[in-house]
Image (cartoon, rainbow, N blue to C red; front, side):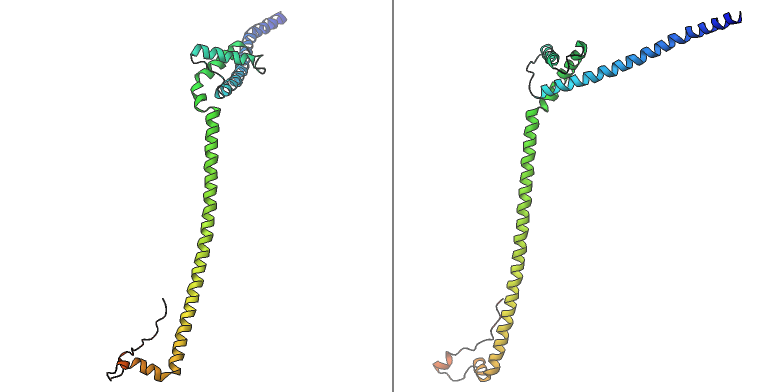
Length: 200
């Protein structure tokens, strides 16, 4: 009798436990299938979107565009094992994003890359010319300093030479600075010389 009661309780527990466990297993399987399907849809969509960016699809109407994309996905060797519903959903997603594919198509992206590359080359050329200009500016600045130094040396030499000349010829210096009082034409032609000014 006790064995029968225990078996009855065990059967009742299993009757409540097995359906709940079955429901949990079904939910887990559905989740796995959903994740697998989403991964397959994403792969199919990426392939369709890449082909759309390359300008492969030409149909304009929605029905023809989806049909064209589905044909492309069916013929793709990596997607032949997928179910038609997955391919249809990926084709619809690709048709919805066709404006995005046209905006960021391969030709537009390549033109943008070429433009940016040209801009980069122009910047590099400008940097090179700027460096050359800075080198020339430094050379001119050093040259100017050298010329000013030489002018200063020449000016000091001229001043010293003038001072030595007036020390050697004091009488000539006095006569040149003092005009004669007689009215002879020869005296009137003599003009007092002012001290030499250094060149500026």
